[in-house]
Length: 194
Image 1 (cartoon, rainbow, N blue to C red):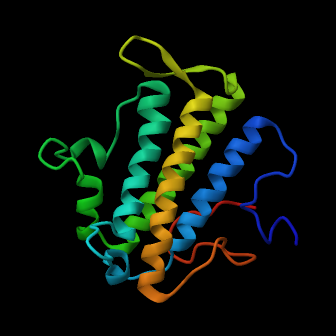
Image 2 (spheres, rainbow, N blue to C red):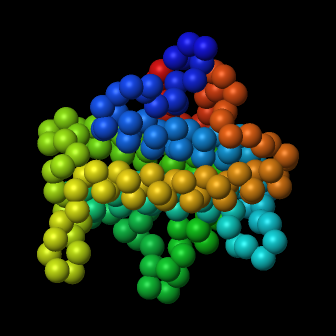
């Protein structure tokens, strides 16, 4: 196995920051593999009583990436499309509105948001490390660290990658823990370089 065959694998013996970012990128990649190369019907498939869809998860995780890498990290306001959504009348807007988006738009939104998030977190780590305090704070004024923000993002992906496992298997039977060796997203959008 070469690094380019499994470019998403975390380091075998890296720093704490390298392991956290590596674990996050592995989850991002596994999630993207589970959601990849589907048409509108595949992205809208539901199972059982759940209203979750792979399209909704793509849009939701793009929103979470944006919140974590902007609002929670630095206090920057959310940009489009998040700043034009009517969150008061539809708190699940990110999940629900995905049914009206094309597959190309959903993949492009997630891919672009993740690339920006990677760059923003990379710059923050280089500038101040995991112990630096970020903009996000509890009501008593205590700020969270960048470490906590990354751990929260890992937790979010862990939860939703499990959902994606079930949804994708229902769509076309795709199952497995990791993408096949050499995998890269087939649908539109920037790819992570190995």
